[in-house]
Image (cartoon, rainbow, N blue to C red):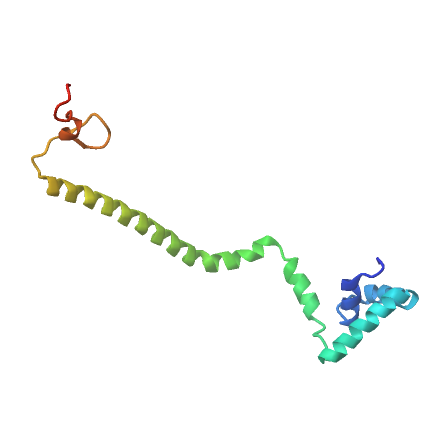
Length: 141
């Protein structure tokens, strides 16, 4: 154990270490005055805050078991979230489709505003009015 390992000493005081590890920390704290003072300050802090509740002895064990579970066990969570992901995908597709429809509707509205008998040039991928290609009055073509 490294001297002044705050996390280990705190875990030792909170009884969160395995029996073997707790014994090693206890021996070190007994021999090292710096760590003994640190443990004493942690104990007084715990008492001052009123943290005399005993921790659930199985909590750390259950936490470590769940943390070390194989990844395939998390498939259940993924399967539960699958309907939400599918819904988000459908919403995104509907949004893209609606935006494309709105753009098409604007093109139709532009043609109606100009008049249906207007001739469009096909020199560019987008329709351009032939009038836009004519020279300004007074310019020589």
